[in-house]
Amino acid sequence: MPGKNQDTQQKLQRLRQQYAEKLPERINSLEQQWLALNLDPQSIQYENLIREFHSLAGSGTSFGFPQVTALSREIENILRDAQTTIEQNSEQLKTEINAKLASLKLSVTAELN
Image (cartoon, rainbow, N blue to C red):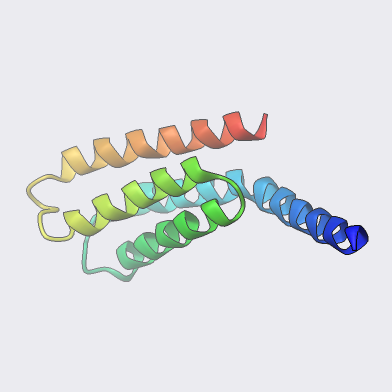
C-alpha cells in the first residue's frame, strides 16, 4: 500500500505548506492586536489575544513549527500571569511581549526561507 501512504504524506505536506503561507499574516495580526490592546486584563480583547496565542501554540507543533509553539506558549503564559499584576508591570510586560513577538517573527522567517 505505498500509494496510500504517499497520498497521505502529500496531503499532509500541502496542509503544512498552507499553514506556513498563512503564518506570517497570522503573526502580524496578533502583533497588531497586541499593539492596539489597552492592557486591560479584564477586556474581551485581552482574553481573545490569550486564546489566539494558545491556538497558535497548539497548531505550531501539529504543522512542524516547534519554535512557533514554544514562543506562542511563552507569550500566552506571560499574558496570563500578567493578569494579576498588569498595572504594576505594564512597561515590563510591553517590553517582554514585544521581544517575544520579534523572536516569533524571526523564527517564522527563518523557517520559511
